[in-house]
Amino acid sequence: MSLHSAAAQLVTLAAEGEEHGGNHESLSPLVTGGSAFLILLLLLWITTRFNRDR
Image (cartoon, rainbow, N blue to C red):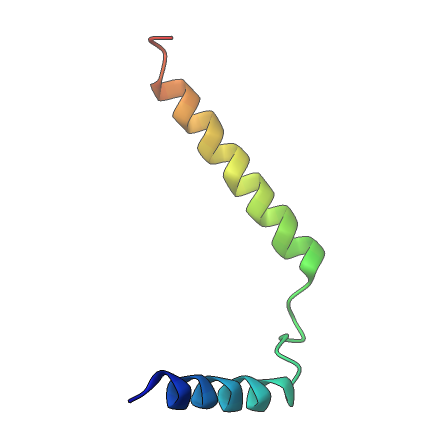
């Protein structure tokens, strides 16, 4: 498989995905982003609790 044919297949696959919009109706960007932010803050807090030698 050459690089050109692989790129052509990826372009075709991406074009097919655009027909459906790509977003699920039940996913809210605000809820998804807020959840990710809270999870990262929780991981940061856990990391700082284990790193008490500083």
